[in-house]
Structure formats: C-alpha cells, structure tokens
Image 1 (cartoon, helix red, strand yellow):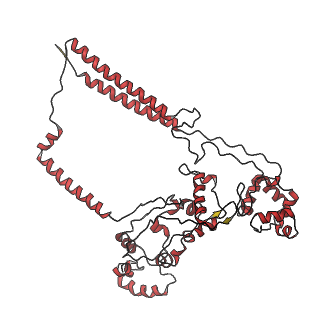
Image 2 (cartoon, helix red, strand yellow):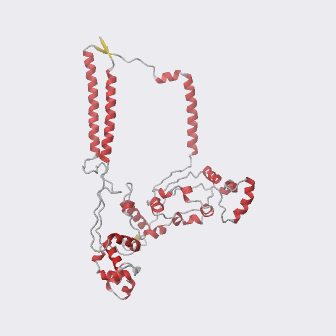
Image 3 (cartoon, helix red, strand yellow):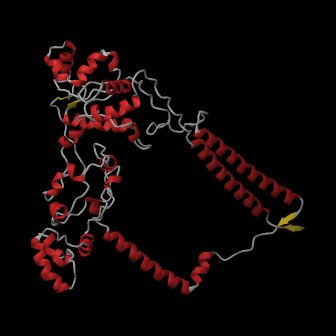
Length: 443
C-alpha cells in the first residue's frame, strides 16, 4: 500500500490562508464603506445692498450681546428685520431708540413694551452704511445644516457615501461567502480522504509527541523558577491592588447637566476662579451656583455650529442649556424668570477623608498654585474627572518639590533667612517650612 503525507495539514494551511485573506478583505470593505464623503460647500446667500461680511463683524461687535438672528434674547430676533420696518425708521432707532420712545412713536413704544421694557443702547457712531451692512447680514437666508455635519450622526449601519447600502449588509454578505468557502474546504478534505481510502493510499499517521505540560512538569528547574516568579508577580500585583483602595483617580461620573470644561475654560478661556470664586478666599472651591451660569447663559441659549463634535451634536448642547433654564426657571421666549425652580443634584468628584485638612485659599492665593497643578488640564476635559491621586504620598511629594513663594511676604522672608542657613539652600521647599508635619494636614 502506498504511503503519502498527511493531506489534512495542506487543508488546514489553505483554510488559514483563506481566513486571513477574507479578514483583510472585510476590514478594507468596512473602512471603504464607512469613509465619509467630503461635504459640499454651502453656497453663500445672495444679498442686496450692503456688505453682509462686514455686517457680520459689526453685528458681533455691537449687537450680539443682546440679539440673535433666529431666537429671542434680551431683544427680538433680527433675521429679516428689514422686511418689518422702513430703513429710515431703523436708522433712527439704532442711533437713539430712547428718544423715539419718548417722542411717542407707536412702533418704538410697542417694541419697547414687548421686550420687557429693556432699553436698547444707542449707537450714534454707526453710519447709515454700517447699518446697511448689518441689515444685509440679517437679511441672509438661514443656511440649512449640511448632511454629515459634525454632530449630525447618520443612522446606525448606513453608508453615508450616497450609495445607501448598509454596511451591515455588506459585512453580512462577506461573512456568508466566508462561511460557504469554509464548508467547501471541509467537503474537499472529506472527498480526498475517501479517494485515498478507495485507491489503497495510506495516510502517514502523525508521530506521537510528549505533551508540553508533561515535558514542563518533568523539568524540576523550570518548575522551581516558574513558581518563584509567580509568587513574586502575584505579591507585586496584590500589593498594587491593595494600595489603590480608596484612590479614585480618573473617576469621571456623568452629571445631571453636561458641563464642558473644554468649551468654557478652553475655547472661551474663562478663568477657573470666575466660577469657583471661593477657591481664592475659602477652604473649599465650592460648586458654582446656577446664577453664575446665568450671568452668561441668560443671553446664550444655544451654541455655535462649530462647537458640535462627532460625539456631541449642537442639538445635544442646546438641550443641556435648556436643562439649566428648567432648573433656574428661566423662560427664554419671555426673557423672564417663572419662579419655578428645580434642584440640580451634582455628583461630587473630589472627596478627601474627613481627617484631612486642605485649604484652597492657602494654596491658590498665598502659594500661587495653578488649578491645573492638582486638577490637570481641565481646559481639555469634555467631562470633568479626578486627575490626581490625592493620596498622602502625592501631597508629600509635591511639598518636597515645591519652593515657597517668598515675594512680597515679610513673614516668610524672616523665616527663610533663618531656615536657609540651617538647610544650606537658597530657596526653601514647603517640606522644609514644616509641610511634612502631621498637624499641618491632620486634625
């Protein structure tokens, strides 16, 4: 009887090669199907009279604090205002609205009363040409958001290229083809086995090999070394795990109102101590009251289109601002408080043990420590999290590395003159000034 090699190995190699080829093909098809199409540039709206580009600059500089194009703010929405009033009347109103109200102009008085009797700032410095430019900007047709714009997510499994074929359908078809080919390979293997048997061909059996685990168990040196390694490694990981008990680094809870530090502290460069004003004079930084939020959001009821991201759409951000209005009882249409408020149950992120004393004002005002030193680059955080460990070792390490701020402090100058001789240094660290004494941080 003729002996031949084991053809099962050939089948397995073919199966492995086919599988790898199909995997790479699936990846390529999925990436091609998911690639977004380049957005088409929106055609600029045609305007008659005035320069809308210059008008936008003038609008943002003079009008945007109280007016929006498509929503009521302190004043009425201004898109299409040229169709509501004559230009001669608009010139007079912009130059001195108070004088028109006092003169008894019916339209001016009505507009004044409809907007909670808010007095519009006079702009005598604006020429009629400037006003024409602003009117040209407010007369532009509202541009519809382009398909595939940031924040406007397509339905799951939809191909955004325009073919309209679902990615799931493509992947399903490829998976079905792969399954068919695998079944065919098994059938070919079975047919070859029968052919070999019918022709009296004997397939060479595999040589029996000692299992790897048996070979390992017979080698006493390897067993000893491995046991010692496992004991040391397990001890290391158990110690590391136990040392993390009570450490909440990277704790990132979801808050009842989504507040983006990236937008406020990053894009808009709002100083941390504007909202957390207590950090300058108090032990705790405190949670800003919603009245602080309303200092800006009384006139900011929606975000700009450019603020949207793939994760968070413009509609999402606008909805979070509406949650703020609901909490404080603000009616943005009437520009007035309703008196119906709801509490916001913020989730605390940073929480030191009760036996630890930490004073924000001592670090922020006296020592001049930046907020980012402990809280990390908050201007980059979409969702606020605990950046540092806030452990005792972390605090001690900071005290050992941080020099004491001596400038303009006669009290520290006297102590520095005495202690610098003792330690033989030019600048003292917080640790050398007593920053490692137990009573400094523990009651």
